[in-house]
Image (tube, rainbow over all chains, first blue to last red; front, side, top):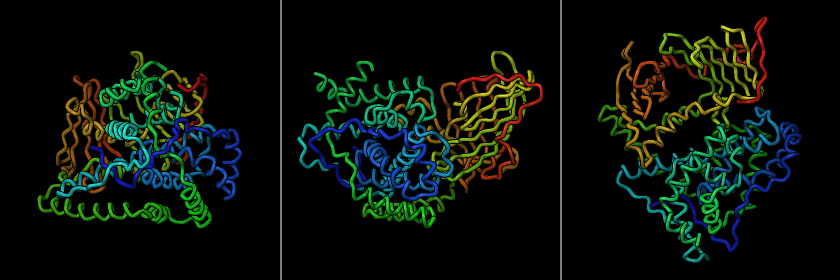
Length: 209
Length: 280
């Protein structure tokens, strides 16, 4: 069973799948140049990208509190390292996803370790599963199923699935984020999906009908 | 997108949960970040303050501190370094590394020498230098590689040919600590039996110093990694296949050393043939 560290999820009536809505990428290059000396320019850059980073995080954790904590950590890294960034506006978005992926994976590792340590000492952290107020049982079940299946994957696979299906990145874009080849990402995506299929196969079939 | 992808995409569309960003968090964080920018607040204090805002973070951290103390006391009682060792400790330690200098030998006894600079934000090595020997298409030659985010150079010294690439070489664009992340994932993966991992306390062959020994038996190669018991950083890597032709040993790894001046600036050798290529 997946254990959740943090607060609950709220189920809304609408599905939000396409999370990469940044239409102002073209202006980032100029903005980045201004940001180093101008907090107001940084604020504009931050507001332009906050939502995408938060949504990527929340789709990795399926949990808001952890997503907010990690989003905070991501932007702190950005503040500290913006001077080192010398890429284009397109590379800036990939850079953000790289930092976010790093922070999410670190967070997941720390959470796993905490659980193991607690188990080792004979304690159980009895954190409840996601609180699904307002949801139908069916959607809550799908969410729980997907969460458990996703968090059971290697972090590399989790990253690829999230970037592909939740953030709608192309394979070439995912490859850029991960510093890998598109062909490698494609085969890893296929392996990740095969693993997910084993875990959520019946539900997938049901929804496909 | 193939049928499998489409089917999963449809499945994801059925998942309904509130993933909308919270404006309050966005505004609060913005203020914290602007303060951090203007005051240049120390990193750790700021991160700690933001993360510790949540009750659950405080509780779980307190629990982890208590339990870590339990684990450490067990370690001391058993006088065993490996007992308390977790691969995560090495991953965390490597997260603090800014430069790496590695020296080693390949199966022919050829020495290689490499430097890398780690980008603290991404954990990826964004600058890389290596001087050594390589076998490619049946030909063995001495080579220098310099890879940066802007331009990369691969210099075949034997033929005096420089290949220039636009951007960072993809073969050098990786996370230095990723091998440990991979080991950890292999250990936790459901197919962990495919790769056998051994961890035990041992000593170095030459100086007899205490180390943590990690052996990873992969499908094609076996890795032997020695980890310093205190810093948790790897001090040597060795990999070998079924025959010794694959053997490569990194004998010395130094961390956070000052970079030699101009190490990532490639100077075009006199009379060299230059080939321009797109990123590989």
